[in-house]
Amino acid sequence: MKPEDVTIPEEALSESFLAATGPGGQNVNKVATAVQLRVDIERLGLDPAVERRLAALAGSRLTNDGELLITARRYRTQDANRADARLRLAELIVKAHIVPKTRRPTRPSRAAKARRVDAKKQRSQVKQGRGKVDY
Image (cartoon, rainbow, N blue to C red; front, top):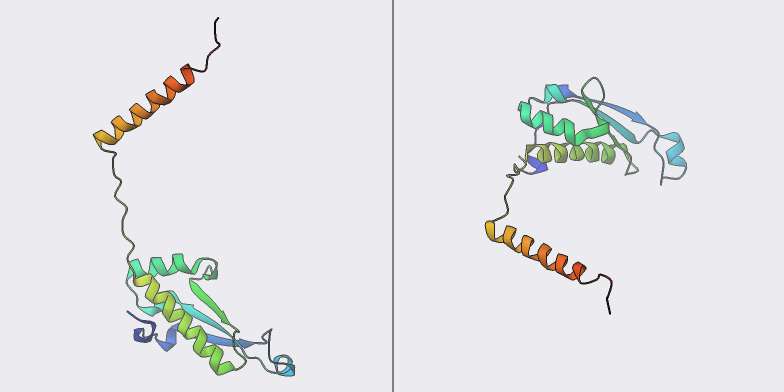
């Protein structure tokens, strides 16, 4: 799955524009080019497991109301920042669709245990040889 394949319902999104920092000269002070995209995760219509992974990936960007907050201020124009915010949302959704592999604990083999015990015995012998010397 690619970010281009993700369809995001418009009713799940709300945008607000704010003054951005960074490059842009006097334009930065006059025009609100940064975009703050609020996404209601529940309205995206995702599978519950995917929704949980998306919430985990969002981390501190997730509000108490269950909204994902993405702020895009990388570019100098509003349209570019809007596209950037939506692309970042799509990338997050794609990452959330990836099911992590479950870890299966392994046990050391009998031979590995024997090697470990032999190494411990050998080390013990080395340390035993470090005692005081009697003449």
